[in-house]
Amino acid sequence: MLKQIAVLLCLVQVSTCEGFFNGKKPGSFVNKNRGGNFNGGRSGGGRGPGDFDGLVPRGGGDGEKGGLWNAYLGVLESKPLITKSFTSFFGFLIGDILTQLFIDKKDTYDFVRTLRMASFGLLIHGPTGHWFYGKLDGAIPGTGAVQVFSKVGIDQVLWNPIFGVMFLGFMGVTEGLGIDGAIEKIKSTLMTSVTGSWKVWPIVHAIGFKFVPTEQRLLYINSVQIGYNMFLSVIGNK
Image 1 (cartoon, rainbow, N blue to C red):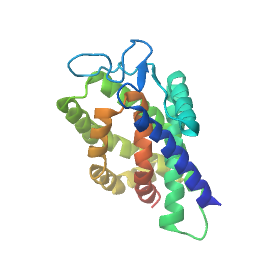
Image 2 (image 1 turned 90 degrees about the vertical axis):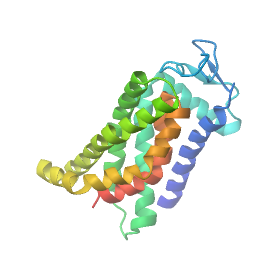
Image 3 (image 1 turned 135 degrees about the horizontal axis):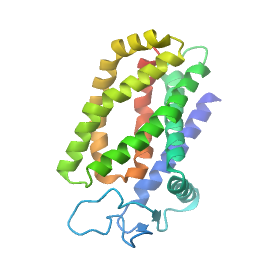
Image 4 (image 1 turned 90 degrees about the horizontal axis):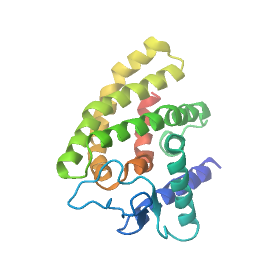
């Protein structure tokens, strides 16, 4: 039953993310505030942090996929923080379910561990990602090579270790290790988390900063991160 649930959750996450990639063709989005298109209506280059405000799909897909994507865009626009928090909730939930079913393969499923991972996504990853990527795009607007390189560098040199401290600290405290135990967990595992991130996220974020609007970036990140969360789940629950 758990495997069927995991597959269903993955299909929902993937089909929602697929709506973005199907919908981001030129002319497929209309900016309600400016009357422009996906490119932000500016001539000669960079997109500002507000260029994607109020984007809605034009024709956005067919059938259930289009309906799911339209619904996601609607709640994302009206309740961005809550929507991103629950997007991260499902990303971490699916990642740990897949890890326990297909990597750990233990006789007894650890529901408390899955709750810890999903809670981190809901309470920490979603809200902090909403704040950080909004601030980063606001401070360095545009999608040119220099801007993308700068944002990837800041993400990986500054935000990556901060995220690692938050994740490992949260796992340590919720595992009942106490403050001292959480600190030891951070000391022993942080470098593994940071260097593991360097193997995956620079190229992922380069694509994201170049092509994905700020408001939709956590969906993009969480869709990629389902696989990466399996790595986090392993090191976070040692």
